[in-house]
Image (cartoon, rainbow, N blue to C red):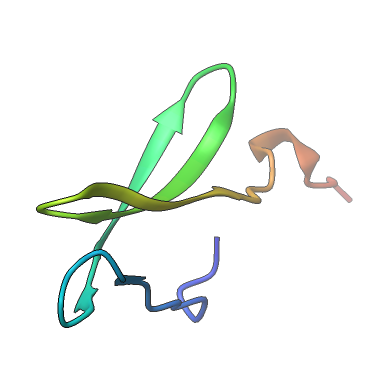
Length: 60
């Protein structure tokens, strides 16, 4: 997950289109997901976030 990976998302069901809120949801068997939600219309966008496993580093 990168702090520079900022993606804006709009709810086009709102008139005029409104910015959505972003949250990260961790699902134990499915990984980490980024969810954009509209307070009125609910989830707008769902995307899986690539995360490095804690056990992938090498020891010299």
